[in-house]
Length: 241
Image 1: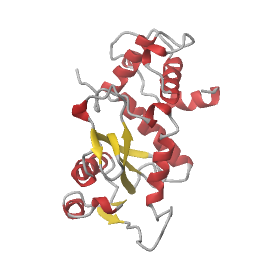
Image 2: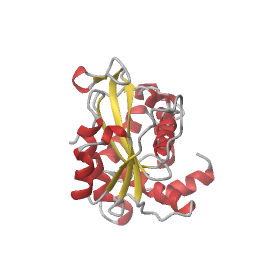
Image 3: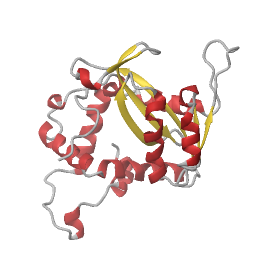
């Protein structure tokens, strides 16, 4: 990160407990180096053990990342940055609408059979990423399943996540895979108007559909990182200690 980028990131990072008098041992490494190391790993698609010597030792970087992930600090850090981006774009930090969709990604050989599946529609053997984004394409909720799991099966759980955190979200756009009882569940239980944007049978080739193109752009952003172009993770969810 440049100095200007780090100035923004540093202000958005959660404050360690030892700096606020809540106990704990001070960190031995610079947070800027740790964040840069994690970003390098995701963008380059390398393994943890292949971390260049310019960064701290790979096991220290992984321990830092795992601690922040398991304590929810990584999610809090992300949410703070998203709020800043929305404010800079002239939007309210709290979104009122979103778009839901899923993307199937091929899995590497390291992915266990128990957590992978075959998506018959996309002809992909691997895992599926289910996401909800705001109208800027910024992530509100993420869920990872086997590629064989249908969008309807995960729709209720996925929509409930932004509903708890972003209570002002009252409208969500989706594709034809989210029809059926999910629409009634969203309206009756979550007070969310789920609007299905269908593709016309008369249209051939690629067409940017209203609202739905926003989540497709987010998937394109994710695919810019080599570690996200294919699923390498052994577990689809973090291990809790």
